[in-house]
Image: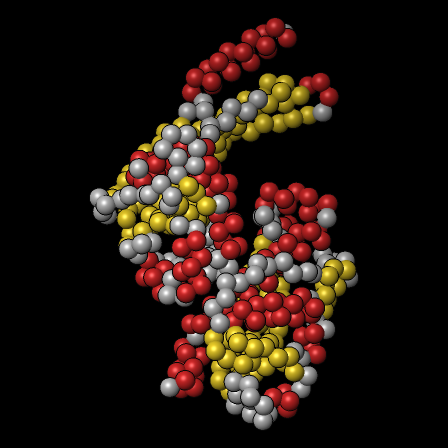
Length: 218
Length: 184
C-alpha cells in the first residue's frame, strides 16, 4: 500500500513539475521620445504608487526591480526608495507625491527641493503602479493529526500587472511607459505531506520589468 | 491595554514661508487620551497628547521663520505675529486585523487646524486626516503583541498627518489668498 502511495506521489510530482511553476510574461513598451540618455554619474529613482489603499505597489517588488537595475551589465545608479522618500519628506509620501509631471514641475520650484534632487543627480523618476494578486483558486486539502497526514489537491492562479511611467526630470516630460503582465499557476498536492509547487509570478514580473527598463534607459 | 505613542518622522525639507507664527496648544490636546472599554477592546487607554505636541514642534520650524508657543490666545494680541495656529484633534480611530479581515493594524487621526489672525479673526480651517497602517509581513507578531501594531500604525498616521499639514499650508487657496493680501 505504502509503495503504491509513494509511486502515485512520485508520478504526480513529475507531472506537476512539468506543468507547474510556469509563468507567462507579456511586456509592452511605449517610448514618447527617442532622446533617452542616462549619463554615467546620473541616477534614477524607482517609486511605488501607494495612494489607493487596496492597490498599493509592494515594497519588495520595487526593491527587486531596483536591485536588478543596479547589478549586472549596464548597471544603473538607483536611489533606494525609502531613503529617497525620507530625505524628501513630506513631498513623496503616498498621499502627497506628485501624480503628474506638471505637479513635479511645480514642486521643483522650491529651491530646497530642487537642490536635494540635484544632489542626488536624478535624471529619471520611474513610478511603478500595480501589484500581484491571486485571481483564481480551487481544490481542497484536509489534514488530520497523527501518521495519516494530509490528502488532497489545491491550485491557484496569480496575476502580476505592473506599469512603469518614466518621467524625465531635466525636461519635466513623460519619456515613456512599460507595461508587464505575468500569470502563473501554483499547485499544492498532498499525499501524506503537502508539497508546494509555486509559480514565481512576482519574481518573473520583476525580471521582465527590470530587463525592459534597462533596455529603455541604455 | 495602556499604550503611549511615540513620534518617529523624518526631518522635513525646509520650505519656509516668511511668517512669524504663534501656536496655541489647548489643554484638551496636550492631555488627549483615547479610551475605550468594551468586549473587544478592554480598558484601552492610549496617550496621544505628548506625541501631538512633538509633531508640531518638529515640523513647524521647517515651515515658518519663527514659531512661538503661547499659553493663552490673548497673549498673541498686540504682538508681531503674522498668524496664530490652534490645532484641534477631532477624532481618532483604530482598526484591528480581525475586524477588517486583513493582516494589518490601521489608525486614522482627524484634525482641524484653526488658522487665525492675532486678534482672533478667522483665516481658514484645515481639515486633515492622517492614515497609517502596520506592514502586513510583521503582523503575525502583532497577534502576540497588539501594542506593536498600534504603535506602528499610529506613528504612520502622525507621519501622514504632518506631511499633509505642510503640503496643505503651501497649497490651500484661502491661505494663498491671505498670503497674497499680506505681501502685496
